[in-house]
Length: 137
Image 1 (tube, helix red, strand yellow):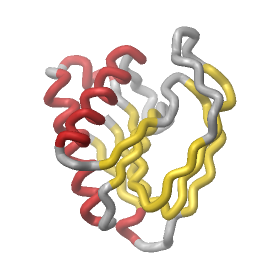
Image 2: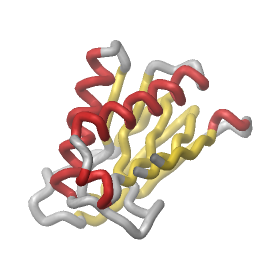
Image 3: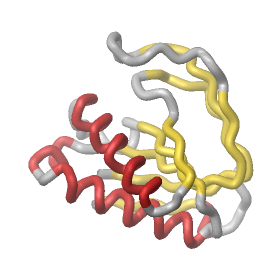
């Protein structure tokens, strides 16, 4: 898995192109403030592991990133541009659903960007080192 975490003072998206035919319909734009955005790529080798271990490791890293940036809000964003290796959309979506549930159970506020879409993004991120972190696991 590849995980790029960006702390954003403001993060907005607008769905533009549907890339997965059976994805839920999304047309609304949304904006979040003071959130850790997880740009997440689940890779093919992750599918060889127990899905709960994959999800748990993702959540552990997201919680660490959120603590480093003094936020309790985490946005999960599927970003299949961090590696050439990709897990199936079904496996990836399941990891996202499990991660969101675990974060909520740990009293984090969470959101997901529309899965299966290209999005117009607007990111306002401050310029300090902990605002941008990368993990590969």
